[in-house]
Every structure is written in structure tokens, then in C-alpha cells.
Image (cartoon, rainbow, N blue to C red; front, side):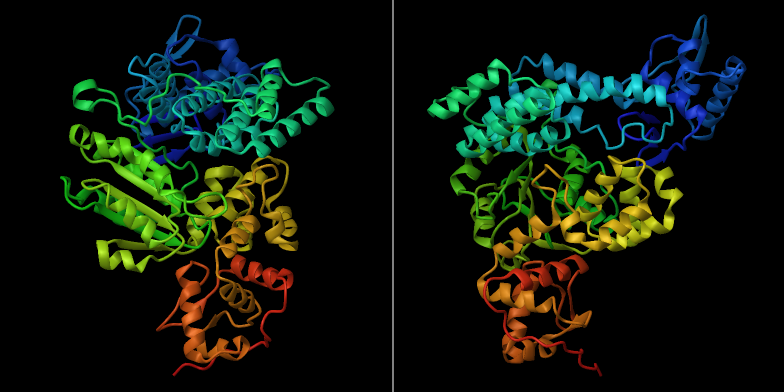
Length: 599
């Protein structure tokens, strides 16, 4: 049994997790676990349970809470982590196996004292941060605990993130650092070190204009909000960027990412991908992928490859990361996620990809099989070029395209994702907002999931907005969202978290004639349609229309298809209509059509 503090307070047993309901015993348990292996005074515990204003019977009531907590432990089979009554208070004993906070701190210490170099330190730090989930102690209703203890806990995480980004920069992995830094700088705008790292990472990747723009935004924020100037370090960084100076190495990074020594020799864990905190549903896909990855043969033969495809934002990368995390023990050579596209959707230069993969290929003889996640592959040719160089390893490919050619040439197994099932959407909302908040408005939660089209990225964005507005009712959010879902499914300040921007980028990858077809389909009144239904409005023959629809389906912008009808997901239909309104030049003449009757 294991307690989890770095998210909703819960007890886990293997794959089973029990999220504790808000209660006074839950407050008590959180306070004890935050101070595990130490004597915790009665006065402190009373304050954490009841707040600064305590009832006269608090001491007796605390004993009752301890009794209820012990009964809860018996119910869930917790035997290795007893609550001890000791002189002066109570104590609970925990180690890295029984409490995630202890494991987090141990892994951070490993990272800080890794004599083997920055690669091993980075692996340990990523493992440490992978233990965190969203909604830290969201189900613990202690105002004092959230005021006095949770900020210290969050600060530990921020220091670890800062260190991880330093390691990425030192290893020359600025792209990985940027992904994290865009998020944390928006979530913590006052954190000057994060902003400094972001500006540096942008400049080191050749994005001088963006680096300067980011510096000026931060300078304006400091002056207007706090009345202070940027630090001397930041001002010097701006000057170096303006002069176009070489910043030099952050440390003494190796030319490539080297894998740590084999676990059998050193005992150090191989690099692994962290779990996705809000991941929900996809049970069939997870079971199929984990089984196939576990059964994949090792050796020096052709790589074993699996493809996860589907619409933009449908959760392809999340599924790949989750499956990688679940199978991490199967890959002694470690795990590596490689971004295969540029921010504008173009294919990433093959030379860059090869350099990032070089460590895995070169160390394969010593380490054994590795899992490589090729994220957002642009076309089959790009995937083939990489697969030719990673013999003996296992590859997870994510792409918006079906990449059917890889099935014929490499025996790739395809896993195409659709929208989440309603129960999975509910689980996702619970994982972000907490069970109590969702249970308080179950009908509004269902309406929210429907308004988001059960689309994972849309649900995460909506839930994240609600998480930052604890007083906002879910029903009010649904009403607000319904007025303009595409415009409002956006997190201000995070350029990645926008459904409209995501879909704009996906459509921007299409050929012009496919953009016209996509826009026209948004005007269809029918929920399901086939090529003959669309031919009149497209001004094409049924055969030509069928070809266009097949090509759109291959990009993930349409679902299903022959021999059954095509479908367009609700958010994609709304976006297609918006595309039709804003496209330059006329779309082909359209008229509403009704689907033909099937026989």
C-alpha cells in the first residue's frame, strides 16, 4: 500500500487507487504524512484539522479522528504505516515505497548528487517530477494546511523543475526545456529564473526575436505590476542577445545524450517518461499497446513499431507517454521522446533527429532494448528514415496521419483514437477538479464534457480554467463556454493550450483544395454523410469526392468512412464552419443536403 500526497490525497494498491473523501480524518492524515517520520504535536494537528479557531472539544475530537483513521487503514489493508501515539503527539512512519513525497525527495537528492554526470541527474529529476499530479491535496479541506503547508510543497516542485531545465540546457536539449518553460512561466509569472531560462532557451534555438519579445513582456510585467526592473542577470542576457553574442555552454555538456550505465552494473534507473497526471480511459488501447510492447522481441533485427493516430488534440502523445511509463521496466536501454515536427508543422530536419537518437543507437549493445517515441510524425518517409537506424529497439509513433504505407513496409500496428467515452471524460474531470467538485454538479459535468465534444485537450483546458477558479460553478462554465467554444477553449498565456490554434495549425498543413473541402463539410446539416451526399456541394463526381474525403480522413479531420458513413467531431465541425467564414476567397458553392437513405 502506498499513500499519495503529490496530487489528491489517496491510497494505492498496485493499479487500484482510492481517493479519500474530504473529511476531518483526511485533514489529519495529510498533516501526519507531510511530517512523516517525525513527532507531530497535538496543537499542530488540531490547527491543521479545525483551523485557527478550534472547538473546545478539539483534543477529544482529535482522538476520535485518529480512531477513524486507523479503522480506514484496516479497511484498505494498510499495515506497514501505523499511526503511533507518542509523548507529545503522534507519528506516522513512511519510506519511499509507502509515500510519494519521500520518494520525490530521495530522487531529487539523487539528482543533486549524481556523480555520473548531468544525464543521470536529469533522469532522476524527471522521475521525481513524474510523481506529481494535478490538484495537490485538492480533496483536503483544511484552509490552514493549504495556506501554510501546500505552498512549501509546491516550492519544492518548482525548485526541481528549475533544476531539470538547467540540466536540459546544459545538455543542449533546449527544445525539451522550452516545452516545460512555456508552461511554468505562465503559471508562475513572478518566477524570474524560469523567465531567464525561457529567454535563454529561445535564443539558443535561434529564435532571437522571440527571446527579445519575451524579455520585454517580462520587463513590462515587472514595471507595471511590481514597480521593479529585471535582474542584472536578465539585463545582461538581453544585451548579449542584442549583440548576437555566443552565450557559450551552460556547463560542460556531452555532444549527445548518453544513457546511464546498465542497471545491473550501477543500480541507477534508465531514463523513463513520466506518467500523464490526467490520463483517463483508453483501457483497450493501453492493454493492447502494453501487451505488444512487452511481447516485442529484442535483438538486432528490424525495430518493432506501433502507430497511434487520430485527430489533433485527441490524446495521441498522452497515450504514448502513459504506455511508456507503464512499460518502463521492460526497456533497460531507457526511453526517449523525440519531437518530429517544427512548431509550424514542418518536418524537423532529419540531422537533428538523428543526433538526438544517436545515444540510444550507440549504446544499444551495452544497455539492451530502448523505447523511442517519435512524436507527431509528418509523413511515412520521415518515419522510415528513422526506423532504418534504430534496429533492435521498440518504437511508438504518433501522427495525425494514418501512415498506411508503414503497415505494408514495416508491419506497423495502427491504433486510431476517437473521442473519449463519457465515463472517461468524467474520470478526466475528476482527476483535475477532484471528486467532490464533480459530484456536486454531476449533470453540469456531463454537459461540460458534451460541450467539449469529449475531446481530451478541450476537456483539460476547460478543467484547468475551473481549477484556477474554485468558486465558479460548472454549470456557469458550461453556459459561458457554449457562447463560443472555440474561442474560449484557450488558456491565456500558454500558446500551446488552445483548441482553435491547434486546429488552425492542422488545417494549415492541408493542401488548398482539402482546406476548401474541410470548410464545406462544416456546412453539412447531416451528422453522417458519404461521398454521394457531398458531391453536389463540392462540384465533383462521387468518385472524386470519395477521394477527397479519404484524404481528409487520413489526416484525422474526419472519422470512419467506407463502407460506413463519415463523421466529423463536434469541435472540428465548428472549426470547419469558422474556416469557411474566414477563408480568403470563396468556397465552392454549397447547399445543405440530407443523407441518402441506406438500404
